[in-house]
Image 1 (cartoon, one colour):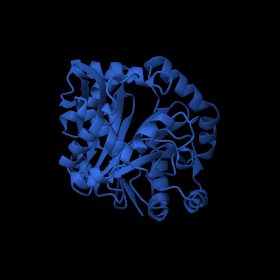
Image 2 (spheres, helix red, strand yellow):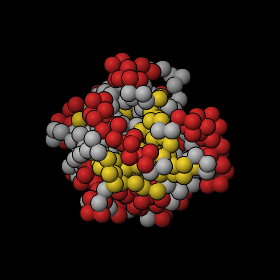
Image 3 (tube, one colour):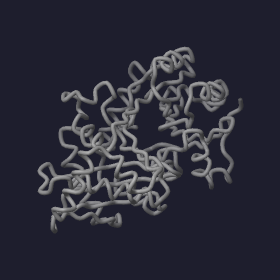
Image 4 (cartoon, one colour):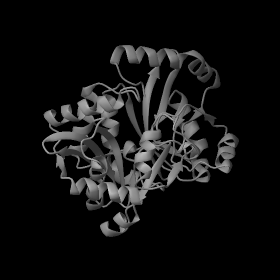
Length: 346
C-alpha cells in the first residue's frame, strides 16, 4: 500500500479525515494539535497511508536524520489494519530521511496483539501519553440513562455536592482564568506528575477553545474556586484532558459534580464516548502503591471499564542510527530540551 503527503485540500479539512479513521479519530491527531506542536520545535507532517490519515510530528537529530512521532496514532483499531500499510510507511519515511518512527495506536492490549507486534518487528518503547491505560464512559444514551449507569458512589457524590450548594460554570479561557486553572493544576501535580510552563497550557486551552473543541470549567464552594477541568471534543469522542483541585475540598463530591458538567457539555457537542484520559493498568487498578491510584479511584466511580492499549512502539527504519539514538542520543536530547525549554521533549 502507498503512503504520501496529504494535499493542501486534505490538510484544510484534516480533522474530517482523522474522524474517518477506523478508531474514530483522536484529538491529539487534530490540526490544532499539529499547529501547537510547532511551538515546541516539531514540524507537522500530514500523510495519507492507503486510506488512513496520519499526523506525524517531525524532529531533526544532528548526525542521525529525522524521526517521526505519530502521537496517539496511527488511527487504526487492529494489528491487521496497521500491517496493511506498514511496509509502505517504512519505504516512504526512509525516502524522507527518517531513521525511526514512534507510534502509539489505540489498539487494545491482549496477549495476541503483543505477539503480533513482535512479529511485525516493532520494538516496545517507554509509554509517553498518560492514557495508554484509561477509563471510558458510554454516553450513547440520554443523560438520565448515563446518570443511571454511573456507579453508586459517583451518583451519590454528584447529588451530595449539589445538595451542599456546590456550583459549576463553563468559563472562557481568558488569561485570568487560565492562570487560575494553572495555579490549581500545579498544586495537583506537585509530587505526582511533571508540568509544562504556563505559556504552553494557555496556548493549548485557548487554541482548542477557539476551534470550539475545548472548554474550561470551574467548580465553586460559595465564592471559593475549588476545582477546575479542561475537556476536549473531536467527532463523537470527548476527553477529560486536564483536571485540578485543592487537596482539601470543602464540599464532598465537588469534583464529581464538575465531571458531570463536563459530561453534559460533551453530550451537547455530540460525544457518544468519554475518555477519562489515564488510569493505572487494569491489573494495577486496586494497587494503592501505584502513582495513579488516586486518579483511578476517582475515575472508576464513574465507570469500571479500564482499557489497556498496547502503548508506545518504535518502528526502526535505519538500525544503526536507531541504536545510537536509543543508547545515548535520546537521553541527551531529553536533557538538553528540558534545560533549554523547561518542558517535556515529547
